[in-house]
Length: 136
Image 1 (tube, rainbow, N blue to C red):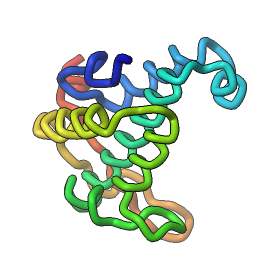
Image 2: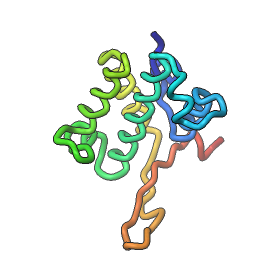
Image 3: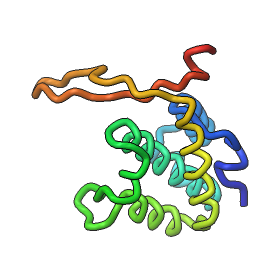
Image 4: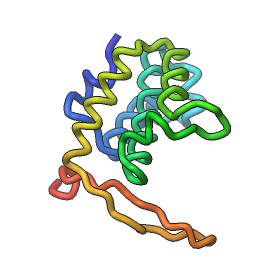
């Protein structure tokens, strides 16, 4: 079974992950597409979600936060939460860990832009700037 590390051996930017997910959806809405996906496609989608959360943790406190910060309404780290979902979708822990290590190296070619957006409550948000996409 192919994993994201096969598709993105050098890591994946947010735009690359969005385009990959759109390709999986084949023009359908996510809920309709998900019902038709193979086990492999569901595993890839779970990895995409985990990598998105890894981006968020990187933007707000470094990659290490992914392994220790508690997930929403759960008493487990983001890593454990997304790994659990990925394994339930039929994935292998080794592939999941491999992609996370690749993505951590990818972050060496990124920077964090602080306070890119302020919401109505005054909270500010950070963003990941992928150098490859700035040049492209």
